[in-house]
Length: 161
Image 1 (tube, one colour):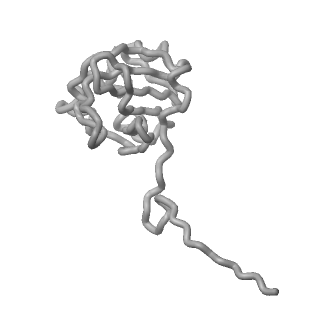
Image 2 (cartoon, helix red, strand yellow):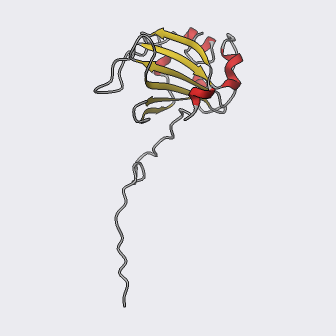
Image 3 (cartoon, rainbow, N blue to C red):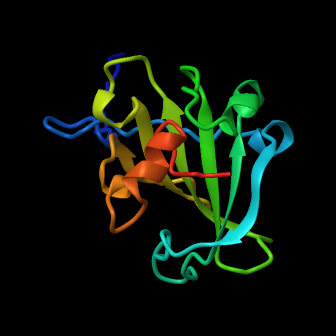
């Protein structure tokens, strides 16, 4: 008896020729249990977009950080350690009840993006944890978004206490 081998095509997102790799989500799965709040719920004018159809526009942000970097976060002029993860939880309501997405920054080793503090930046939608933007960012450090002096005073985080 002969065996028949059937080969089915497999489609992998981001694995085709010329496709960029799908970035890993920088939002830790258990962050709500381990990351302290370093800046409470505040209204925002910098993060006013939405996460697509059916989601509200961002109106409020709360900032959380990994515990190892918490003490340095509030020190003007401090350089946060490599591996620091800061997340702006973004909300469509004034009470900050339901996260609709995150702006995430992770401090990378020197040389990743020296001009902007070596931060890896992502924008992640909460409903499906899809990474909508990923990589280096300069657009948040302009006068049209965050003032450069405010960003650099807190190690390019643009998340003043």
